[in-house]
Length: 259
Ligand SMILES: *[C@@H]1O[C@H](CO)[C@@H](O)[C@H](O)[C@H]1NC(C)=O
Image 1 (cartoon, rainbow, N blue to C red):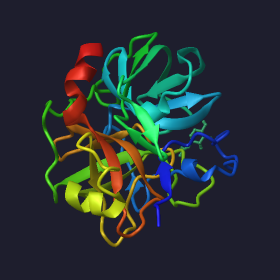
Image 2 (tube, rainbow, N blue to C red):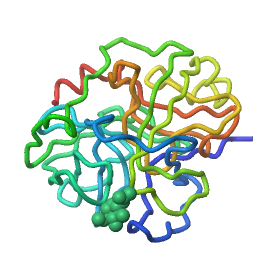
Image 3 (cartoon, rainbow, N blue to C red):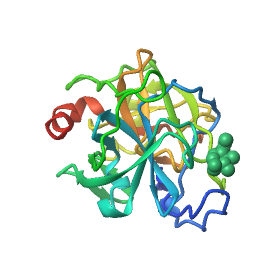
Image 4 (cartoon, rainbow, N blue to C red):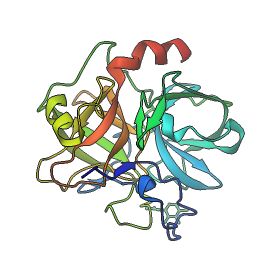
């Protein structure tokens, strides 16, 4: 059976508090499943990407005018999207700015619903300064680094809290998941589906994962270093199907060249 792949972007969520339109199977997304609410200052680099006042993806603030996110979160024109930083609530608070350019990785593509080289850099039209606690720039994992199986990583976002959920939570959530070896993840999805530009995390029995609406947002190690961004998976939090993340260690040089 071919897995039904879910990009983790909430592309069809219309407005906070409104029902999600029935998504096409390939767009069924996930929010943080099996997690807890995050505290102020815990993920000071996370941003919410929105369009027409609707959150659709997460992102990560790298410096005053640069955000990194998933390639599959980057289908819109720069003038139609906004970035909110410094708030636990995607719909209010903190500071919201416009976007001047969106650059997807030149090798980004989608095949059989799976996004490859799923990374993009957005430039902001207004600078966002660091604050004492709620806004801080993220530190990227080093070029060439690759998370080891078994390492605990923490992912945060405003995605769905169940695979079949219909409304996004407004409060930021987080969950910790162990890294799954690439060989195991390839056994789950097929060897060609999981490249060395991806890594995987999840619990074998399921129950903890990122989900629709979390795409593009951060997954970090115990020191808070950005090791991945949320990319795709088979549903959300299913047993024997890890969540798949874009590997920052494969793209740090490219990101830095645009930051
Ligand atoms: C987020 O902000 C919106 C708009 O102000 C508000 O209605 C909602 O209750 C807030 N959510 C939380 C969890 O505070």
